[in-house]
Image (tube, rainbow, N blue to C red; front, side, top):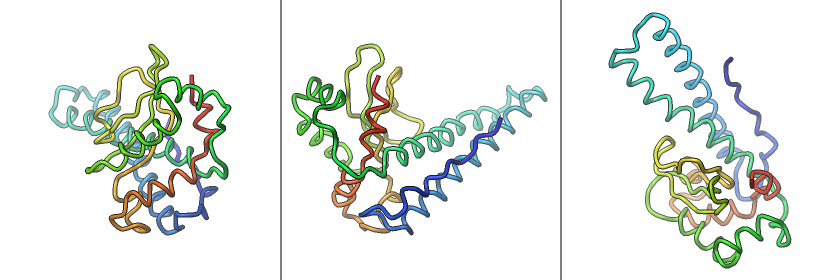
Length: 192
């Protein structure tokens, strides 16, 4: 069963994100979907043909994590955009953020600081499935650094393609625009 690219055109027209930026980003995402499907087909064929002990199989298996996680992280990112209002200060997400960070404001400062760090990657609010604790993580590459057994709640892309068209090197301005457009209902639904 092949993966199909999801349609995120509903977030076009968001304040702070040009349609050019978003359409380019959607194209990049569709590339991850296409590459994921091609790799699955190729790996399946290699398995059937008994080519699993080859360097080619090993490299494609390693590459698969990059493509699959690139696909999935972009889906989570686009899904947690398009919000019109602020976070529900009485909701379970804010209660949990306050419990784990001391206050919503402390969490937000930590998340924004994580996203503003030098380098390319992702800022992700994860929930530890074992304890329920919320933790902000820096993910350097799509397939490296994800905490085992944790659920991503809020995903922010901080690779240059996510903001350079509209903001140049002003990543903090992009982060502010991101926060104005968070779909907090989608994030809250991910909370376990």
